[in-house]
Image (tube, rainbow, N blue to C red; front, side):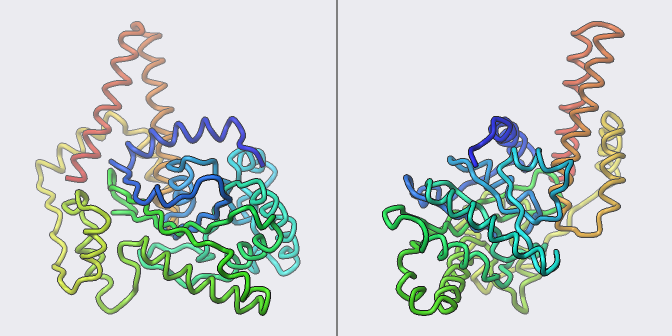
Length: 348
């Protein structure tokens, strides 16, 4: 599966859009990604399809994504395939459908033999929690079965990947992406050939430990909620990954400082909202209909960007038709600047 031109177009647009949406995307451990090798990226799964967008966008190599099969239909199939997405079938999709994974895995084996990059979510499901959930065996199976079939001279590495959001809800919240130390699959092949299941289990266990090192708050516990609220707040966004990780592993934490919302601030936010009211109302209506909070950040970015761009295009066109192109530029530029000012005011 070679990268489609649409993939590169979306990647460039996403690089710009994500930088603005998150108010900063910081990459750590890019040097851990080997060159001239097949790669399997294994990110945690906190933000629905936003996780794949972030890892794919801020990566020097084209990435193909294993994606839940229920998002594929006759309408979405051409679009998703152009973005290097492949369906993966789960038990909840029906026992009979699981056999279709064999063909998907064969495609993955071929791609890895060509030193391509694949992304798979080893947790097997998504959740809003910051800590790592138990891993499924699917990633270990794919990786070791591929290693057994691909030319031994072709290096295959798993790249443990952590996507760390400062907020899944609020605007301009920073996100940190951490690429961990690569896992060389050849190290597991002796055990794999002796007993496949033991090989799968050992790799799954080692991958879980490696992924925890890429997450700021990797473990659940009695003080998880307090640590989460203390660490992930705007005043700590300037800290490095290692500094935040040290905070998470330490015993000291304080209560989260409440966000002050005085009447003047509320009035300013309301006034600034008027300039982009149609797309904001449309997005708000869609968000209210989403029950799974994991999708919030993805929908806000994808749908919100589309609606706002549509609105700004309308303002530009209206200005050009009624007055002239200078007015069109002024209308659109003003709406964009006001939107950014409003988001900054909400955050700080």
